[in-house]
Amino acid sequence: MDSPIETRSEKYLRFSRRSLVVTLLLVIAVGGVCVAMAMRPFVPMWSRATPALWIVAIVLVAGLQRTLGGDRWNPRAPEARAIAEDEWRLRNMDRARRIALAVVLGAQVPLGLLLASLPSLQAVMAMAAATITLGLATLIALFLYFDRDEHDAG
Image 1 (cartoon, rainbow, N blue to C red):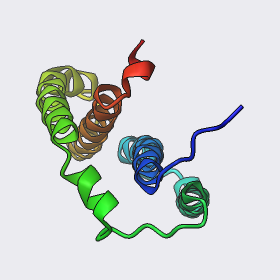
Image 2: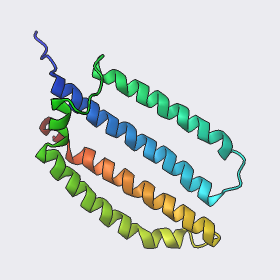
Image 3: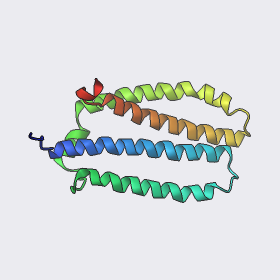
């Protein structure tokens, strides 16, 4: 049985999608730590959490590089430019951006009410960290959802 040979374009597309998944995981992890640090700033555990996040990020990026199968990511390669300029992906990003903006705007009042019991500086910092984390995570997750292949969409 013949297995289809993966083209360089398919490798770059797979790398692009996997890098977005890794980015989503990092955004959620770092954002969660930032929200927790803003809500309880004087916990001594935070000084130990920061180096661990850097280690996790480096391990994820190193593992991600292996998905190219020995090739190096070249942003000037024709395959990378074709992926970046693809009309379908650009339209999916626009859809994800519009919905993520609506989610972020709709979350402001509930976030404000949820964090109202904190001192004002902590509440503002936690709300900023939560808003940025929510916006980025929503944008990336929606883009990944909209950018699925036809056979993945079911």
